[in-house]
Each structure stands twice: as structure tokens, then as C-alpha cells.
Image 1: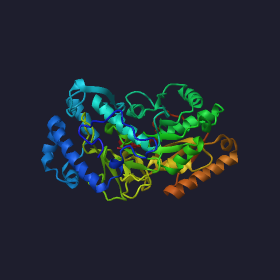
Image 2: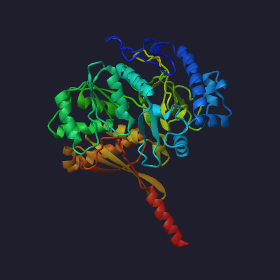
Image 3: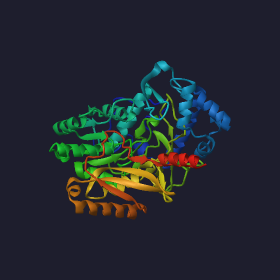
Image 4: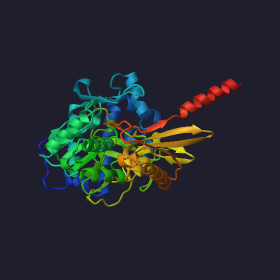
Length: 476
């Protein structure tokens, strides 16, 4: 296997032949059974390393009765190694600020600090050593090569440059690839119009961002009198939210820009987060198992589900020495398969990408619904205006769903057209999701856009519960 060591030691000057499909042919196309033998050996190394250098793992594993010396098979790994959660990471950093007792390297070796926003509690800090940063760059360059990107291509990174690992990871990969990196960024008022101007001027090969932002940018371009296809983008790769693996959304973006769309991205904690990603010939997401070992598990038992079934991804770093994640539970939902891939790589695949977070799911009249499924249903409609909001409310004893949907300008301006579109939305949700939904058609552009991850669900059931509690107290 090419460059297969722990810690990794990549040749920073290596590049495949331009016409080559694979960065590392052996690692990417070897029989899966042979790769799993190598992965087991690597897991033994990584677990021994973490047990020695990270009190978090040592204490957690001692409590579970696990020692790295017991690891003799991948089944042992699944059955004996307890999962790690984001809560574990937050608590470790509270006990041992700022990086927790799982850093595993000297603080002086930390090269990049990233982290979560902390909008729902204490932020989690990601401490990445210089050596690990290079490993991330090499892994991302390899995945981007698989998408068809090559040295000399111009890659626009249109995502927020802050603590967010998405933008920085894409930039690191582009630089290692030898591309012309165009770190445009996002998040500042008026920036979208300027992004359109620059894209139209530079005609870059590729664009990185979120699917939501790409759709918004297309609308901004049209408002500026620019056809998004005139930007001449060839490749658009996304992370941060479901969408790029959803056929209706992927086809909508491809139709607007005339570019190929690729999905990527697991978790910031798992950087190199492109460990699950499309390739030029293969839709969905390949699990690049020799970079990060992915198991899809039952959310209750955290045991692997058979191929073909749904579960939650559980990830383990194979090439990280600083803050290595070992069996980190993602909290997402996906489905995996193990079947021949058009690109010839012998990795398992997530054919529909990541559906969304399990805790994003809501239940309406006994039906489990993911916001990404509603996104997909609406994007199939010709007169959809590009944005919507999902409002969950409570009337009488039942939860209800209200959908506020933008129509396109021509449809909204016509009373009969808006009414027909409302009926069309109702029928589409009934057909695809089995949901009876109240629909409100609103003016195009009336729902705020975002250049980051879309948050489309408004749950006002909490207000109902507060009111009900107050009424109950008053009636006592």
C-alpha cells in the first residue's frame, strides 16, 4: 500500500500522471478483504497510541474492560471499543482546557485551531498539529483528484473562513493538489454579488461551498443579469448539509450551472472530513476506508448494520496523531452498500449520501420526516422559488406541519397560478412522503437566504407546551 504508515509520512512532491484515475491505485482498488487486514493492523497501532497518550481513552476503555492488546479482529473493534460522543469531547475539554485530555501531542506542536461555534453550549476546540495538517491536505487532494480536479485548475472556495473546517479543508486540499486556489470566502453583506462578479470574470474550474449557497448564488447571478452557465464551472463539490446526493437538488444545481456536482463531508472532528465523498464516475459518497474507517451502526446498539440497511456512521481516524477520534458517533443517518463502483474503487458507498442528523428528524402523525426529504420533493417542482420554511405546530392533540414555500415570480404574480402551485406542493408531499401538509405560498425572495448551512425547520411546539402548562396550572 502506498504511503501507508502511522503517523503518516507523505511525499509532498508526489503527483500521479495527469491522465491517471487514481492517486494511490493499490490503496483505492485493492480487494476489500486485503484492505481490512491492513486496517486492523492500523487500528491496533492507533488504539495503542491513544491508550498511551490520551487519558480520556485510557479511562473510558478501562471502564469498558477494553485494552488495545485484545484487538484481534474488526469484530473485536466493533464489539469491545465503546463509542465516543461529542458530549465526551466537551466534558473532556471542560476538565482539561483548552484541548481536552485527548490531544496526544505537545501543545507546542499545534499548528491550526478550529472548532464549533458554541451556539448551543460550550464550543469544542480542534487542535491540529502541523504533521496532521499535511496529512489532511494530502487526503483531500487525493479525494479531489478522484473528482477530476488537476494541478493548474482554479478552485473557488466560497465558504466562511473562520473556525469552520469546511473552507480551510477545501483550501488545504486545493493547495496540495497544485491548483490555483481562490479563497473567496462568504458571510459578509454584499459578498454574494461580488462572488458572482468574480466567478464570471475568472471562469474557475471548480466551486466549493454548500448546496444552499450555490442555489442562492444562481439567483443572485440571474438578478444581476448573468447566466450561471456563463461562469463555465465544470465541477462543484459541496459539504456541510445534505443536498448534493439528493437527485432533485443535484440535478437542479447541475441544470443551473452546467457543471458536475459532487457530495462530500462527514464531521469537522473527523478532518480530513472528505473521508466520505463522490468520485468523478461514482455518485453518492465513497467511504475512503484507508483514511478514516467508517462503520454504519445501529443507533441503539452501536453495532454494524448489514450492507443495504440504514444506520448512523461511526468514524475512526487512521492518520491523525493529534486529537485522534476513535469510534466517534456522528449522530447522522445514512444507508451503505458494498457493491461494484463505476470508478473501480473498492470502498463501501453511501448511495444517497448523509440524510441528515437523527435529531433533525421530526414525527408528524406517526410519519418520520427528515428536512432533506422535503428539500428533495420541492426541488422537483418547476415553479419552486428556491426557498422554504418548515413550521411544526400543535393544534388540538396532534402535531401539524405548515410549509411556507416560495413560488417563482411569474407564478406568484398570478392568483390562479399560485393556487395551482399550492395544490401541486400538497400533492407532491402526499405522494413522496405520505404527509398531509398545510401549504402557504409566499413571494419569491421573502425568505432570508444564507451563505452557510440552511436552517429551515421552525418548531413552535415548545410554545404550545408552555401555554398548555400555564392553562393547566390556572385551572387547578
